[in-house]
Length: 307
Image 1 (cartoon, rainbow, N blue to C red):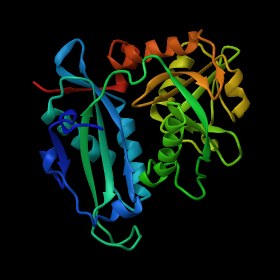
Image 2: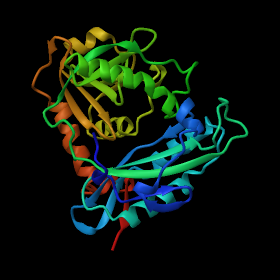
Image 3: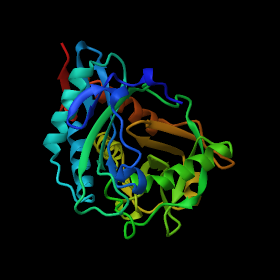
Image 4: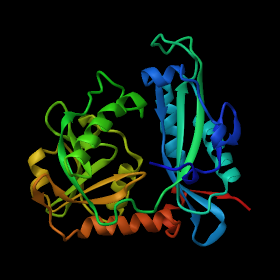
């Protein structure tokens, strides 16, 4: 259970910044009943080299993805507008430790008719403290009995809240059966992703991940890892991945905004090798970039002054 003290003190709610304790919605809010919302998630840290500055990782990409997701809600909200609100949010909260930002676009009207037309939408933003690494020793995963949705029935190119019911079912199933997370297959029986993260495997020194046609989320961390790997001369492949490949892979890791790069130690009853040279290299490189210590990737970092 997250305590209120873990949250950043101010939230952006109904076009103003207010104490998070005052940011409340009605029980009749449309999005609460129908999952008609789109969410984002990005990390920030105090600049290790300048305590009066906050670093946000790939802010522009996160804002653009959320703007794109809003279109599935029949809502036009520009990436620039989202970026300005998030920048102001950080400036006003002045976080002093690693944190996570959750922007949410939602149908804010009060009503019981499932629709996206002729209904009000709104944007809220809040944040909470989050450790640099959630699973420093890695995680164990099971194959979920639940399947990833198909794009023809749910807009998987957007980060919509309704699609996360499958993630919640898979995650709870995994934890209650003794694992940390779940790996979902798609309707074709190929590997899709984890409950809330993309997945990579390493085989024969090649970095492999399911392609967009496998009904995965277009992850920003996933994109970052592919770019970093190519720049490091690591061969990458985006292709269908069979379930059996997970059990014989040289390395498996999950990636996402919250997880960053998290190694998988075990899948079902199969224990994976401890030697993780490619994943370790990518993880170390990603940390250097997030901390703005690599000039080659400075355009991935937004710097916000809080002095």
